[in-house]
Image (cartoon, rainbow, N blue to C red):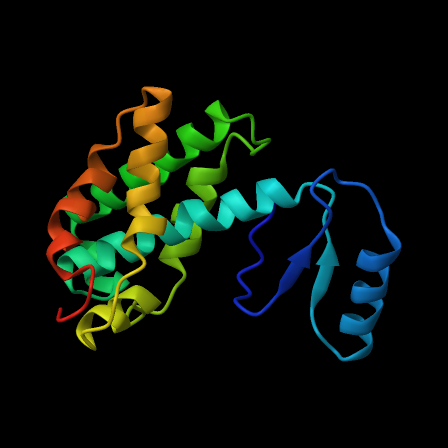
Length: 170
């Protein structure tokens, strides 16, 4: 899995990694429409790769109510963000997801290239008083960790800080 730095790409595939007529038709339609699309034979790995970043990014920007710039410049917050990535990576690997060994390093490098003023979409929901995706992001990481006996203190920090706002009114 390579991080291209593009935010507007589409990857899809069958769960078993096989080629199918429907995925080929979708790929052809996307390419014809000018959409940057790829067909993956490891869609589970792509989904987990995105989830690893999204859960950590959402949790940290919401917990500190800061954009990524100040977070990555603060050594303690940066370390918490990296720990959150590592926790979810460990869960994915324990579940048998074929992820590259250097994924966390690449996600940190990707984060360093983001605009300093970038926030997660969950942060925008938080500040608008909307319901949060916390149960499906950091909450899911904590639950998976519990099931697999993997400690998830970074994501537990996010869950503890954000649970009061889970149904809105942030």
